[in-house]
Image (tube, rainbow, N blue to C red):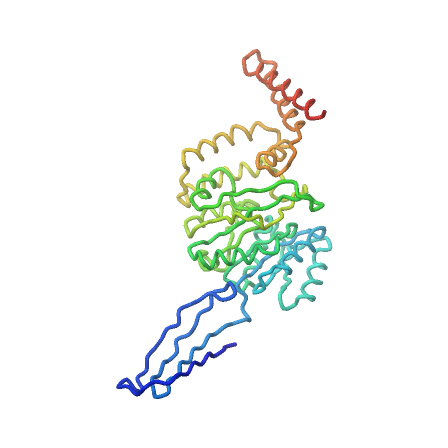
Length: 379
């Protein structure tokens, strides 16, 4: 679709009569999108006419939201509705079913028929089973947009999420990855905490050596800066593929997080990122080593010390305690259940109390302290 703006004015005859000039109309922002204007001719005559054509293509969305789905029927409707109701409209939603066995596919088909102009439903040829990363890669080949959004099927995007991300990305062309802050909700949708992430590339880079400082389902990715336009994730580390991939993308452009809370991140006990936590932590240690070798990642002194401290703290903890301690440390679960730490210290106490050393006595004292704290908390 194109439109013409014709401006006419009178002018006296000149020696430059009939000379053709080429005028380039600079790009400008319109409606939050970058719109290019074509070169046109400016002819000087007794009656001069400037014809400026602005070409717009409304058939190609600027944003492609890809939603991987696997057995998410309990929360899927809320996730889809949150994208359909975005204030930003020049987008498409590609829902990729990774061979679900519940009612997810029926829900997806229902919405794809209802919003056929906006939603495309696809199903993987075989189950990728990699926390949505494989399904995300699969959906990318159907995407038309320059900006690719990750959206998980159990989360909720707030209405202004995409418009604010598009606004930032169009004014920061060096940015390849943009996230947001997030509220944490439980299975019933009640806010239980917050996920706070660093804002600047420098801080994000430093913290990558300690934890994942980007909320995965809040991300917007600039497709033109990817090493391969038709693939996001390197499929080497199962559910940790995103962590490994983003280490490599640190060298491709700037990372940033918006300060606004634009996502509701659901913790419901079946999150892929929170199952088998010790195996995932060991995986993350291997990924950090690979990042140093393959992506030339460099630890700061502070992040290196924190990394070593993580190893010393996480490996001795029984696996059933890791997730509750992690959720509390990240401010995700509140208030903190003192019984978690009490049980942890009881475990450590059982390991060391038999040995007559100072550490064993310290564990006994800490055990008693936590019992007192628990009694106080229950008042």
